[in-house]
Length: 176
Image (cartoon, rainbow, N blue to C red; front, side, top):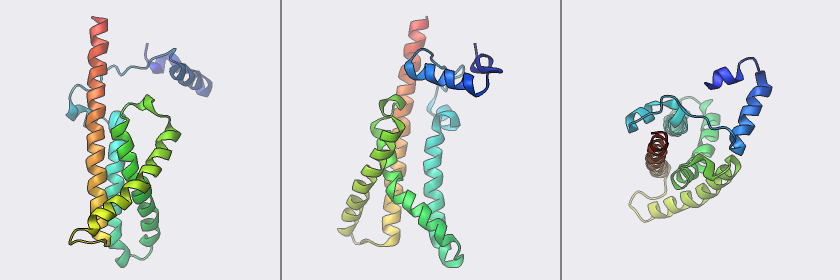
């Protein structure tokens, strides 16, 4: 039975019931067409929306920084994006790489660890840059954080793919 058939006509109450059953383990939701290759998984937003959100936030932040001189109104967007970029994204990518399974941490734990790890990682990036000829300036720090975040997010994506494939193989093994 599909999820749509199960909740048809039940409204919010039926959706909440399904959600609670999934949380306690009474109900398991399975994708009828799960991705089989890394490329398929990358292109399937149901599995990788978090990854593309990280990539988009990094790209938009990198684009907004030079535009703030030309378009003054963007300085507020720069403040907001910069805060997310520095205080959340590096830690979030690290948490996703360290704990690739969704059920390993609750959402609030992921958020707290993301902020805490960002507060530890960004100063270490700055410390490392201090000992290079680049120094601690806007663009070297921004690019270093972007490289760290995107590399770690890509590692997390690969680890999530490996877990997905192991789970898929185990599921197929038990049904055959």
